[in-house]
Length: 495
Image 1 (cartoon, rainbow, N blue to C red):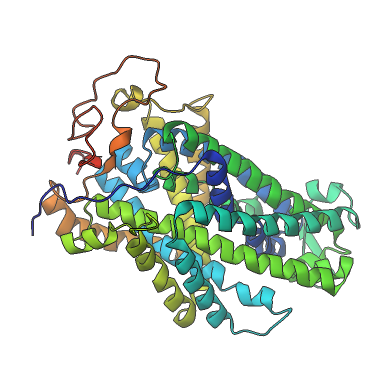
Image 2 (cartoon, rainbow, N blue to C red):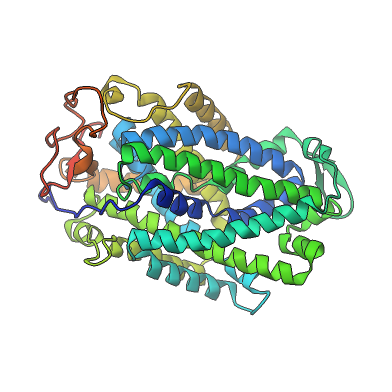
């Protein structure tokens, strides 16, 4: 099957500033749900050593954040990581990133949504699967609204998240029972009154989950086609969101480790019970409801970003033409990619109801580590002649951040569970088959990576004179494209 290489896809309206971008991005980091859903397993496995893991993960995430900031301004596409990797490291590599990304984008929201019932249990009893499915349906309904309305809604929910994190921090730091030295000389409780030392092996084995705790600051690159002046605002949005997420997650984690009456409380992983012990059940109930709101908030933003990834894949002609046209459709009133949002979000409700999806948490940690590693490699390749002339934010002290981040993440991957690595490999094999059987034979008209038309010309702030685009950078004109040509495509090289 062949098709015209220029199936039109409408451009997203640019109506978002840095502040709105940070609200949406930080909502995807969802500090409260990360703190109360992802951090407890770390505390159970690592005790107070979880704080060390979180700090090491924050340093690694900063390296990744610098890579996101530079690459997101170099390739400001709603496709996010797959567009970046595809344009910098080659189309096949970009496709494989898309494949593992799209699977993780399907499973992460319902995994997060399944935690809702635990925190609503203080006021009503719900089946976790039913509550998770309801959260997915509500998130999809909100996700098809316009991006400014979504920024407002998620900003309100984010305020509740920050309030819950602040309450936990204040309570923990005003009920100190453990010495500060316990954070440095960490011990791991066994739940029966005994402890064991926190080892380097425990640190490394938990790093993938600790990194996943901060995951979401890269959402800014998915919003790059909604942001005004993306070649400037994407970097600011990424770095401010990462900094805020680290503070809002790590400070309460420190307070919890210092405020527990004994290390055995960490072994239970029940943070709401810890809050109850500090301030009573009323405060614990309030915090629980704030966390439930945080989970909904996180799922809403994930659905928003995931819909934009699927929208970008339609613009890049990944699927047969009827599918591309449907996924590339924007809502006539809200300007959102509503079909793509439904297509990526609605299956999450089914997964929450029918599949033990939470068993895939380890797989999502591996996927995040793989994508971060490839972004580090792309950040090293982004200074080559092909991309050097592009106006983009450049990270300080290059190449230190991508080199150290890539090496650390490569080692972290070797320490992950074989089951999670095999699931990732199986997903990649299926994606490779689609590439060989469908995309590769149609390389002139399929998987042609593209950028919005308004990013083809140098931005008005560029002080340097225009530099002619390299021959492989785009198949379209190198100056501002007319309104009828919404994208410029990457020539089918590196296929």
